Every structure is written in structure tokens, then in C-alpha cells.
View 1 (tube, helix red, strand yellow):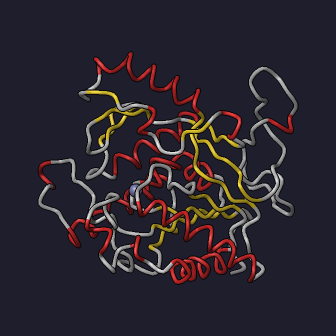
View 2 (cartoon, helix red, strand yellow; view 1 turned 90 degrees about the vertical axis):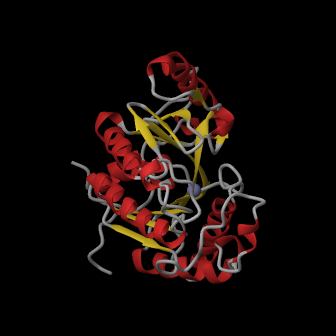
View 3 (cartoon, helix red, strand yellow; view 1 turned 45 degrees about the vertical axis):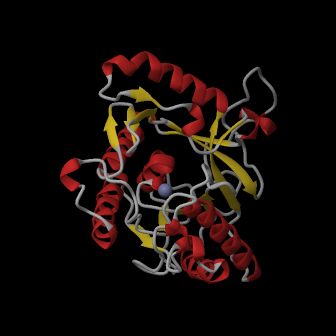
Length: 303
Ligand SMILES: [Zn+2]
């Protein structure tokens, strides 16, 4: 693959919609800047709960097929053309929430052999040669079996890629810094009376919240990429209801749409930073504003 852009980003997610919620602004920015953005989704989310009553009849394979169409529409909003399912469509079934009998289905992703699944991802890595890989933390952000498994498979694939000489230079986990989360939820509670949502979620409902010091990179979506993110989230209409800067999942609890997306670097070297830490400090402890910062041999394609 000699024709790929010089900057290549790979994101590994569990279900259609996770990519837009977690990384929509980041994906839109890098796609707009001409970077290769590749999304691997591990399942079609066919055990997800459906929000619109008119679509409530969709279950199982029919829901999976519908969610793939939603994902396709979401990627159009983000300008992303390379999106794939791990091992091909339907290779791994949605595992459902933790503790349900669904988790025991031998076809579900939770029951997948991690090495075999990582082998599928390794082939994507060998083809795309991403310098940057983004996935969840070991808890999958919030404990859903498919998210935990996506983390395990992604991190195992990085090991296999290292053995094969093509490891991504940097690996990030999706994060939300506690103070930014608290600020966003304070604003949500002020706005709630004007929103069509019954109640606010709690910060504890947000995946990946950690103390601010652990955040090493932040991507500010600005108006344009935040709008693309919100449109992509809205495209996942069976799963997400979006209203302005806020959204709700099937539990109908309102959450903020984060304009800035946050990351913790867990493999590779931190590059030059663009955001100094609160209260001053040196650049070495600041946050990167580009996930490709510090990677040698990358041509600048941004205008
Ligand atoms: Zn998910």
C-alpha cells in the first residue's frame, strides 16, 4: 500500500456508535486534513436497545444490518471512507450487557479467542500501517464485555504487530478528565429544563473518566468538527438521541457532547505539547494537540 497518506490513524471500537461518541471530532479532523482514518468495529451491535418506537421491531440480524447502515451514514458525516468490521461482517456477535446469558453465546465477541481476533486486526495493521491506534482502557471505559474485549484484542494486536515489525508508534486510550467532565455536567444540569430529556446522567455514567493528570492529549473539535460529530451521533438513530450539545442513549439520561476529546498515551513517546497544564508548568507535562505529534518522518498535510 504505497498510496496511503503519510499520517494514518486506526480506531478500534466495539459497536457502531462508539466511534462517533468517543472520537467523532478527532476522526472528522484527521479525515478533513487528509490523514488515513481507519475504523474497525468489532460487532454490529445487534443486541442494542432501540430508542425510536417506529424501529423497535428491529432485533438480531435485522438490527445489525440497520446499524451498519447507520454507521455508513455516520462515516459520511465524518468524511471517513475506510471502516470495517473485525473479521468481516457478522464474524463476532454483540455480547450484550455484562452478566446476561447473551455473554455465553459461543458466537459472541466476549467468547472470542483473543489471539484469533487480534490476528484479524493484525492484518488491518499490516495493510494500513497506522502510526497511531486508539481504543478503550482495560475496563472498556465502562465495563461492557465487548468494550473490554475490544481493548484486549487491540492491545494484543499491537503486541503481534510489534513482533511483525509494524507496531503503531503510539497507542492512546479514550479518556475524559474529571474536571472537564464536572464542568460539562454542571452546564448540562443548568440547561436540562430547556432540553427534551427527563433527567441528567451522572459523570459516573461516562466511560473513561480519570484524574486530569493522566490526560496527555486533547483534540478540540471547534465548531466544524463538533458539528460533524453531533451529526454522526444522530445518524446512529436507533442508539442515540441528539439535541444541540447534548444527547441521550436508550436510558434517556442526558449527557454532554464533548467538543474536546481526550486521550491518555499508553505506548510511545509524547510529542511536543500545545496545551500547558493548568497553573503553569513546563511543556513536557502539557497536553499534545495532535495525536501524531513527535512521530518521525511525517509530512504535514494540514493546510
Ligand atoms: Zn458500545
